[in-house]
Image (tube, rainbow, N blue to C red):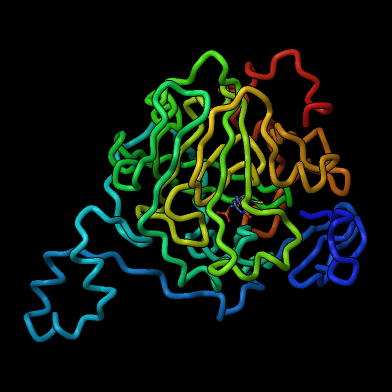
Length: 353
Ligand code: MTE
C-alpha cells in the first residue's frame, strides 16, 4: 500500500503504481484480482518467528528461584520484577468480559504478531517482529490536548487504570485484502476523551505515533513521512466501538503490534488503527493522515471498509484471513454496519472513501 511522491529520490523509488518494498525493491504483484503485498502465512520464515515473550508471575517466580537464583537473573529481568505497576509487552492483563465478541475463528496469535504493517520498523511484513524487539517503550506518556478544557499527559500506568480492561473480539481488515480476528484488550476511546472535556471547537481527533530515527532506522527506506499520523471525526472517535487498545491475546501489546497503546477502529481499513500513540489532539478541522498524504486518490480520510468501492488498483470485494486459503466476502463496514452506518447517512461513500 504505497505510492511514491515527487519528493522521493528517483534512485530510491520506482514510479507510481508499484507497491514499494524495503530499499525501493518492488514487491511482486499479480493482476488486479490477485493478492497485493500479501505473503501467505506459509511464506513466513522461521527466522521471523521470535519466541513468545513470557509474562512474569512475581510470587511464583521468586519462590522458585531462591537467593542464588535471583542473583543470576539479568538486570533487565529484575527491573521487570521490581517495577510495580509497569506493564511490559508480554505481561498478562486482567480483563472483564465484553459484549463485543464474534462467533468466528480467532486468528492464531503467531500470525497476528509476525505479519504486520508497522512501517517505522520496515515495510516487509516480517520486519516489525524482527526489528522492533529492542525498542524500549517505558516510560511512556500519551498527551491529550488541543480543543479541550482539561489537557493532560497520561502515563501508561494511568491509562491502564482509567477503566476496566475489556477483551473485545473484532475483525480487522487491511486495505491490502488480508484480515484477522483478534481478541484485543482496552476500553472505548471515549473514556479518555470525556475526561479531557472537548470544547465546542473540537470536531476531529488527530493521533500521532511515536517516532525516533535512531530506534527506527529502517523507516527511512519506506518512503512514508513520519511521525505516522491519523484522524477520526469526533463522533467516530466517541463511538463505543472505537477502542483504545493496550493488549491482545490476554497480554500487553507486543512491540510490533503497536506497544504500548494503539487504536483499533474495526469498521475502517487497518491503517486507521494507528500504533504506539503519543499524542491525541482535539482539533477543529480534518487533520492530515499518513496514507492520505501519501496518495489521496487511493487512501481517503474516512477509509470505511466498503466492498463496493474498489481501491484504484484492486477490488475490495473479498479478503483473505491470515492462515486460510480461500477468500471471504468483505462485509460492509467490516460487519459493523448496524452499529456505525448511521454516522454516514446521506454521505456519498465513494466520494468520501
Ligand atoms: N501505525 C503506525 N504507527 N505505523 C504503521 O505503519 N500501519 C497501519 C496500522 N497502524 C501502521 C500503523 C496499517 S497499514 C495496518 S493494516 C495496521 O496498523 C496493522 O496492524 P497489525 O500489524 O497489528 O495487524
